[in-house]
Length: 270
Ligand code: SIN
Ligand code: MN
Image 1 (spheres, rainbow, N blue to C red):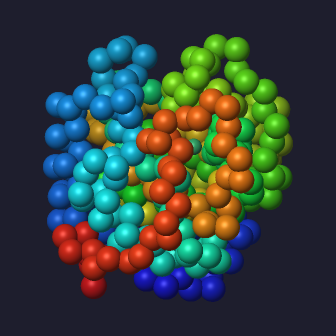
Image 2: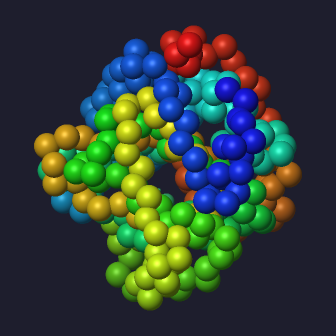
């Protein structure tokens, strides 16, 4: 549960590393059964694909669901987050991206930290995400692509995409607000290559807020459901609030340091 120096070195040099068997198959099934219930509920943090009917993402589930509230305190995620950020942490963002079979849309090339900097006033990139696989993910069902080492360029001042929806909806859409352009992606890939985040359900992948990433649409018959927890250091909370404050399901405001909780049904396999 405590990260090895090899994992920390990989995070620093590549901007990501893989944590195998972070959740047991039973824990994944338990999370999935809660998540599927969300499909029948309405909530402001639930987002649809462009077709206006397929669920794309559920945001801020820890704010209304006990299992997700337990997940953010599970030692296998909370302890590495504290280790990577060298501080106590809280949740800035939690989302389930469901990228459904046949209809899940793409995520264009981008960095995450620019959203947290420009929209939420998070002062530095000392913020980390962990993506947890709720399905087996392969090359067919829309895995994330990372450009190894791309976090070392820092936060790129991307201008707002003209075709992105206005307001926070553009931050979660297949037409994203801040994107990395093709010439820069080409240069970064020439240097760092590409990594495709595939693996068994229960796998977790940690990644830096400035790592350049994207994912293709899911035209396969298999869902690609993932949870992304974003932990921020308590020393990195906004010192002023933006004029257009995003909803709490995108911009966490409970800055109390999280304390580990016996993970119960979410315990890591031995
Ligand atoms: C993200 O970049 O935040 C999510 C991408 C994905 O779900 O494929
Ligand atoms: Mn992202």
